[in-house]
Length: 128
Image 1 (cartoon, rainbow, N blue to C red):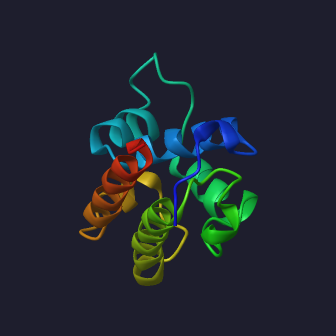
Image 2 (spheres, rainbow, N blue to C red; image 1 turned 30 degrees about the vertical axis):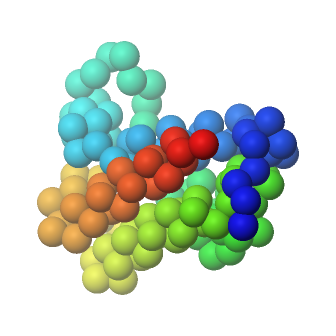
């Protein structure tokens, strides 16, 4: 399947928001700075919960990413990338639940898979 042009997407600014969440998920340094210590004054308030709500509640990206092709996703490679991110988060939630603090999630060994899947997703999103 061919990748759609960015200009053909229904909600390109929502795509930008998704990419912003992926950038946060892909960097442990960012997560500690923004979500835990809130030490960087250049970063507006952010927390892991915002990403979870975007993926699981505000969109169907967690349950049916394919339906978002043409809306915020350009094709199958991005569907697979988002699916991998969601699967990595789901594994953390399945093992530890959904009530930990951001700082507690970041200490779990499985969190490294969330970071890696998010880095890979950013690569998929940057390929034109």
